[in-house]
Image (tube, rainbow, N blue to C red; front, side, top):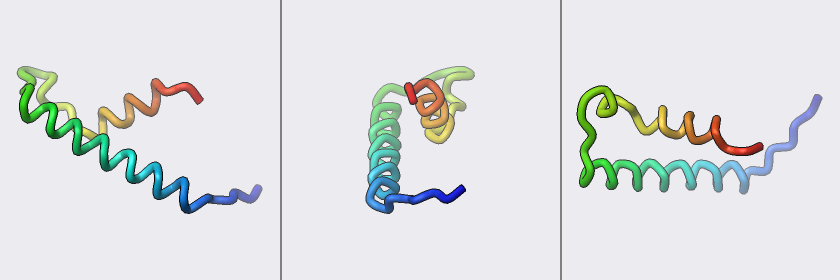
Length: 55
């Protein structure tokens, strides 16, 4: 099976994820979490978001 990777789409996804991480960091800087919630990483949030997105 051959996959054709559209480099423009790959760059678009990486830019979206980078922007998302920046916004999450900015939000949680001004709205700190406490307890167990405080230990979640941006990468874990992205994984949860991607897993919950419709395909």
